[in-house]
Image (cartoon, rainbow, N blue to C red):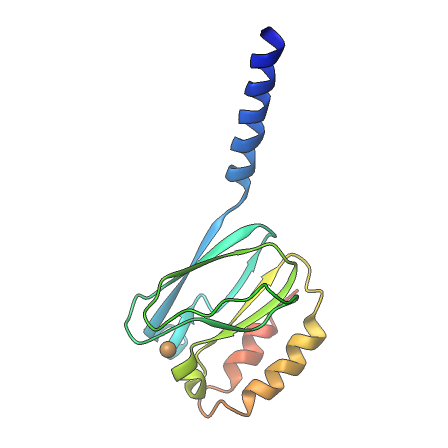
Length: 147
Ligand SMILES: [Cu+2]
């Protein structure tokens, strides 16, 4: 009896510490942010594997759509104005965009743990830049923060 309840207590403790370690980060989708018009804020995030990120439709008419992930299946595609929470278990660099505002440079970068696919991410960013008309410098600025 004693050992049974002890085991339960240890299990409860282990579960509590797991949830305490995984953090949730918030990214706002904005018409006007510190980087100018049509931005994610913060547009660069470094998080730990297992953390989650919540995209908040603070202003209307934006979405979040991942366009590069370190592995297949670790992607998301939100509808317009949708609040999206993603749990990021796969290490690497993630690139995402707001579909209607890609031409205005509404893009973001998330680094999860080690930047295992940084070369791929930089290459993919070059391709994205051909679709960006304004604020072209943002994507590179965000990627430059990857460590
Ligand atoms: Cu947008």
